[in-house]
Image (cartoon, rainbow, N blue to C red; front, side, top):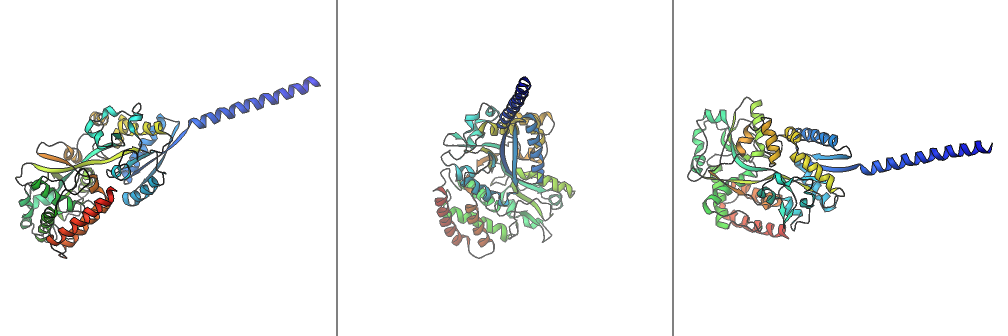
Length: 420
């Protein structure tokens, strides 16, 4: 009887020990599993492609679960601003160019990517590309792709009116005479590019940056007067409508021969034009002599890791996979622009995907002087001052001379506040 009781007790002890070991093993397994948050903005197509890449990543790294956080751009900026201020930002983030200046003036606002270079293949990027994401010698972000501004053309309307391209500023200013339909225009601008185009005109003439590297205003009152006069001439000559387009003009409404936008918009423009059985083309900006023109460039967007992340290596693994994995590159294509990663470019080349309007528009052109746009110009407060000035001049509420003085003061005051 005694032996039987001992045997039963031994069985129970063994069962409890096995259960305990299993529990400990499960606990260890759970501790090895990591969940990281990843945020981005964009439309449905970007969401679908990004989710497909996340799935591939989780298959390769089954111990890492990715929690996606995504939205359209509207509202995303404000939400992320609140998250960053509260130290609640995601582990990995798609960020806009001006966020480096807004949240990491001294380089401490985001994680130093150099410290995870053992898993993040930085040698896939040129020194210049890495420089765009560096603050105070700290690598805060990696530029996903580079963006530059070009003219896009509705080739059907251009052919109808005998317009090949606008080579010079004078050709653009005098192009209304070729358009017979009063409801159609040579050019249509959105509320941001409507400032950029006259800025390029003034910068070509003066050699000055609109906003300098140190965040101070590069244009003086006379330059702003010249800028606003050029814009008013576009409106008065009916080269552009007085009402500014909200958001990049995709040309699909068939009411303008050309639009002025970033190369990252090319895929959308080309797709919508094809859907409407229209051809889409592009050209460099006009210039004084019609030969060498200016174009603004910037990182289209960057990836950054949170300075507060508890899982920097896992976040870096995801970042490296998105940027440098060949299969990921084939899925994403040009969704976020022509990739800056040399590995991604090679993968797309092997897959015969280095073609189309966006790829061609993004190619280097020796006749174009590329100028890095100031991140301060991406700030919505600066853009608001500029848009307000354009509306006042465009609708005849004030003269370019009067508006230049007011705008000069407003820009200086706003820049002073942003730099604090």
